[in-house]
Length: 258
Ligand SMILES: Nc1ncnc2c1ncn2[C@@H]1O[C@H](COP(=O)(O)OP(=O)(O)OP(=O)(O)O)[C@@H](O)[C@H]1O
Ligand SMILES: [Mg+2]
Image 1 (cartoon, helix red, strand yellow):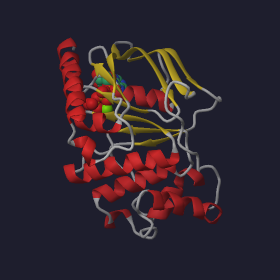
Image 2 (tube, rainbow, N blue to C red; image 1 turned 135 degrees about the horizontal axis):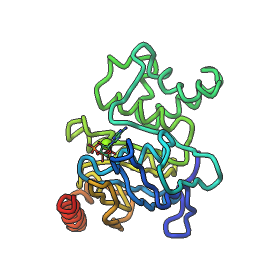
Image 3 (cartoon, rainbow, N blue to C red; image 1 turned 120 degrees about the vertical axis):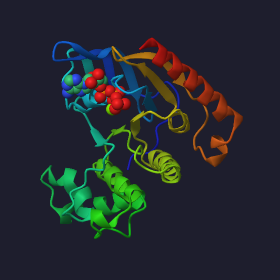
Image 4 (cartoon, protein in one colour; image 1 turned 45 degrees about the horizontal axis):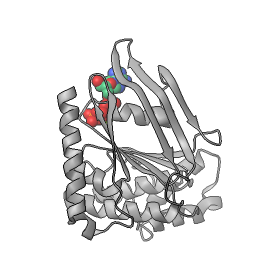
């Protein structure tokens, strides 16, 4: 597994968006002129109201859709990423282990050849004891953990997450936020995370990209310079309150700008 990247601007860029725009059907400007550089080890949140182009930005980075204008460049050439969507999208007929195997299977690797990688990924998300369970036997939080393990099993440089915890209750969400940060520290990947939640974005990120709708665009970028690891102490700190206030103000500006 990769070790955590050093802090600061010395970290190498992993993926860069330059002047990226996306217009649907020739009329709907889902995203306008977005610049974003994600570096090794960054935790970036895209925060903004519904319709501001967060999912569009993520799908562009994932290569699921093509930009109308601008460029997306990966250092080292090929995209190297895992994706986690709001719905865990597991195969109901397959076990937990076989669900996590999927991206490796698509690369032509047999289960036996990658069994250790699947077990490692399940261990990292706290599901080492559930390889043979079926999705219907799992809670919502556990299903999301399987989905995260599946995104990580290929050891990608970047993990893209589109509101992964939005459907979960607050306690489960806090727990998954804690675990996600621990996991990220352990594997040293870059995370780009979409959320509506100011609280979640401040807790998780070192940068928050605030977006506005109609047309979808970036209106501000906030740095959350609190050190990692972050724990419950951070959630109740004055520093956290200060950052959530700044992010809330930016979000209000985003709503007013739409
Ligand atoms: N495939 C598509 N065809 C046409 N319009 C689209 C398509 N995908 C997105 N849009 C439009 O682009 C805009 C941005 O959508 P997007 O899904 O990126 O927003 P979002 O910020 O993710 O919103 P939400 O928070 O509700 O998920 C919206 O106006 C949406 O209707
Ligand atoms: Mg969306």
